[in-house]
Length: 76
Image (cartoon, rainbow, N blue to C red; front, top):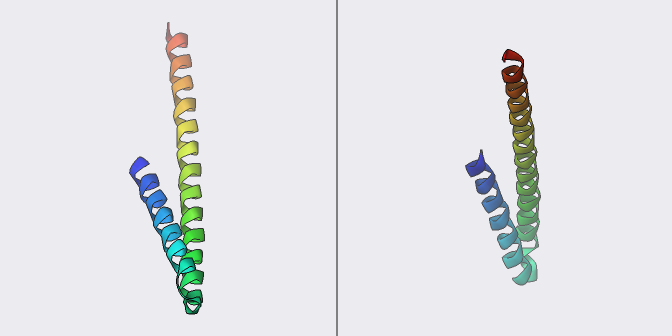
């Protein structure tokens, strides 16, 4: 899961870098800037979804640990 988050963050960073390069180039590069901007938005959304999924997984793991601890105490 962590490598997926890192990969998505790198994709978002690459899209932002492409947007920066496109913004600094000739005015005729407006289409390239729009494409890079759309890619950055998509990558950001993917990264956000990955973070949310990781948070949900961590919450589920915490709940499972609490349940296991309660079961262990009850078994004693």
